[in-house]
Image (cartoon, helix red, strand yellow):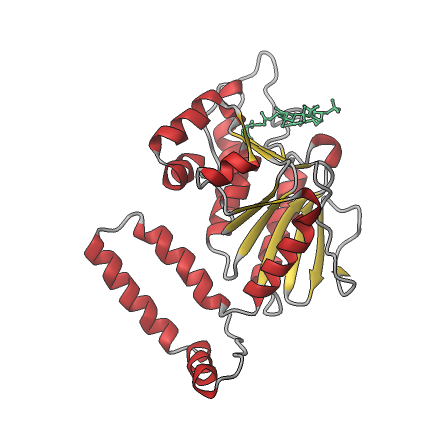
Length: 280
Ligand code: T3D
């Protein structure tokens, strides 16, 4: 099992208590959020949802943050909904209102990730199950430790994939594999997840922290405003016909072309010097 990818640089600054439900740290322009309920494999409680939501909003609003990394403490990434949490788990004799739980917590979480103004990396250090798996898949680039795994655990408890799973899975791996993963709920190794295109990259367990930090610092130095527009346009393109997608590209290029990063990128190219991007 991979160790938690703690910020390996000595410049990492802790921005929350070390025992917070979501531990926040920052290295340069890269912010890291670590889900921190390791004894329950970082499964989601209401309090953790609240802490995560605040931390995501804070990262989105902070102009000094240009890339976000999300990971888990301990041996797991996230085991989805905490099935023991009072008020969230079914109680004998009572009818649970799962729709309310999903609407209140998982819908906003997926929409928040989809609308982040900066690139988001999931550093999957261990098992990612249920909504924990789809939480990771909502991120722009998913980098997993080789010992990590992905489980669409929902069917085993009589539910369907949520947190965007029904939308994301067929788009990532096609209908046949989406149905196989979601119906059977089997554990998918990180290597197999990468092979079928579910995630971006697999690295050896001991390499996860360094690989993610290198990738995050690289993204942070890029024109992040354009990177966020790439996500928006690719997602929007799933709903558009070809001509509408072409026209969306024209409109987005128009917006980006008026930003300072485009001028800087072209000026740096012409002057044969490294660019310094600042838009966000
Ligand atoms: O309200 C709603 O329910 C709607 C929302 C739904 C969204 C969802 O996410 S539904 C899916 C919920 N998640 C699951 O069904 C996954 C349940 N967990 C597992 O199947 C297994 O734990 C794993 C396959 C993820 C990992 O297995 P393993 O053998 O590596 O670890 P373990 O021994 O099962 O778990 C370690 C501890 O974490 C254990 O606690 P203990 O016995 O040491 O005190 C286990 O109970 C706890 N844990 C793991 N997952 C959850 C959890 N505790 C609460 N909720 C969990 N989801």
